[in-house]
Image (tube, rainbow, N blue to C red; front, side, top):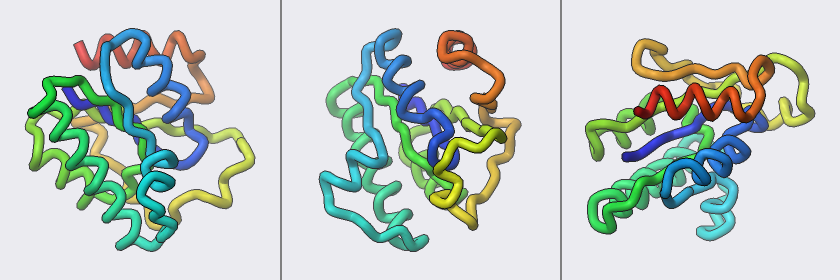
Length: 143
């Protein structure tokens, strides 16, 4: 299974992915760590797509070849990148994290973030739920 926690910076992706990994045996790929590993400091759309597609390829490999569950914790702002992962793996579980209260990293938001079609995603507003409540919703969603 590939589970993707995505949303704007500081929405709780890494926090929830780390907690989720305690409940589901899995490998975790975090966007910030991936950028540091490959020295990708290009935050243009092209640079972001390159990083996201690399994460998708790694997740697909780990799931198919190593039979590992994978949790991805990345912004995934573009439909094109989400479609790419969906083309690699037919049953990706997408969790879209949002928040409205200021958290101090709003200057890092992706201005051209393409909102997902919520029919195929679980949306969690991390302003309204505790970590435990969010994990419960995620576990129910992923089955």
